[in-house]
Length: 166
Image 1 (cartoon, rainbow, N blue to C red):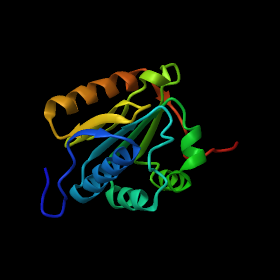
Image 2: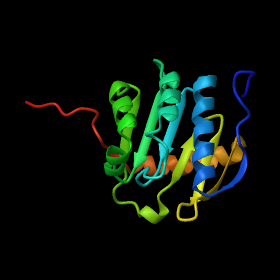
Image 3: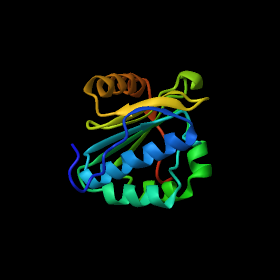
Image 4: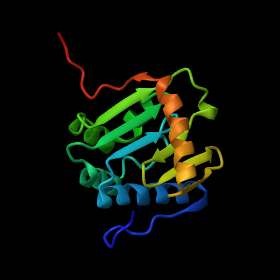
């Protein structure tokens, strides 16, 4: 998974918002450097994700290439649009790679909060205390993928990158 250009990814349990954000950034950096083909990001509203930070946008820009797939799943995207202006601009530019889905009927307390790839995943188990785990272990990646797949099955397309008038 990791090569000389890709730093070692964090693994194990994390606690607190600062560590959560740091590990998310490490995952996105690895995705860009190693060229992961697919990313799935899920959270009820992404309010406390670092999506609007310059460094995150730089990593997403480095990651974005034809043939890649970026899926977002949220209850709604109001907080993303309100808090993460740089991400909104990036998402518009790369609309052909980005699929945004909403699962509005899901309970926000039970909504999955995760970054998944086929190489590494991070999952927040308690959003209030911001605790969870991350790592490359296949069993945990599969568990997270199945959880996200179930939520994606119940979701609908959301947050169009542009609004076309008639």
